[in-house]
Length: 457
Image (cartoon, rainbow, N blue to C red; front, side, top):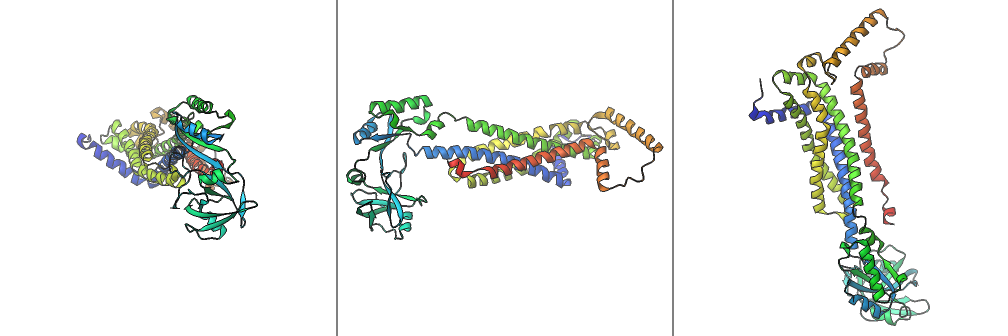
């Protein structure tokens, strides 16, 4: 009896669901393989794109170039150039000072929140008068003093003492040994420690992110030439320059990693479904006997793969999102997550369907006669006939040759005999377990081999 065409889809889906439930161990292993592969590939991709996003956000708040050893007039000239978008005067004092065992150094620049991000005053105001300063609360903790706006602070400056008023605080929580003390421009221009020091101009160029690296470099040195800055005093932001020329590297790295992971997952899924098909020969033969067509058998097997995807993909998306957010919160981007999640949903379904294509084709070619004999080997009736002849010859030979009574039937011996009778199934099981191990090892190595300190350097 043919299946009603109007109910074919529902009936095949119900049969596929029952098949998965009837073999829970294989179904669970398939689910874990898909979840692990999809989670690993998506997490790696989100991490790589998150790294680029975090780098982009950092570079969006940094200078493109530093013009060092310049005067106030040159800073103003650089700021007036039509190629510059933003210019920040910067004067650091390289001399370190010490008060009550706590080291510090002076630095001058304006408080800027974006563009060229310097520092943000969390409490109080920026320094304007000669003796006004902004320090971090960690500096006050190191001195053993309370962080109060307007408090007086005496600092030893290698031979003399200067009294300051703390007009503001930052919450940067510095862990460095030398604490920065932000001073006013008046102090930078008039104090004995800083008045003779040259300025540094922190500069961002207009539309630099859209420039080829050669155009960017040319513009940087042209500004230096026009403003009388020595070439040796031009310090280009190497990370920004690098971002202009290697935009496609992360894409190829992601593609290679995803391909390797997909290959491993595909082999695992292929092995599981091949073993499933060969163990359900009688059931498939019964379906064919009652009128199920070869095309419907293929659809039934493919529906099983689709059901596995429906269960595994949401779990993978959830785990990947949580992991990528925890691993790199600065690079988390919701838009990238949904976009890559959609891509990997399609990717996961495609890999699973490709992996089960061959087992589905083998299942559709099972004949009712082969099913009744339970001798299906995936190679057709000719192969079965050859196998039958070998078995008969083996039986005749065993009739003439007595079994060695001294060879005991240990569990290992029985396992060897079983594997010898189903070598192809044994090979696929071994391959499946091997590539399953590869997936787990890739995930473990990736998570343990990442060195945050080395990356930051």
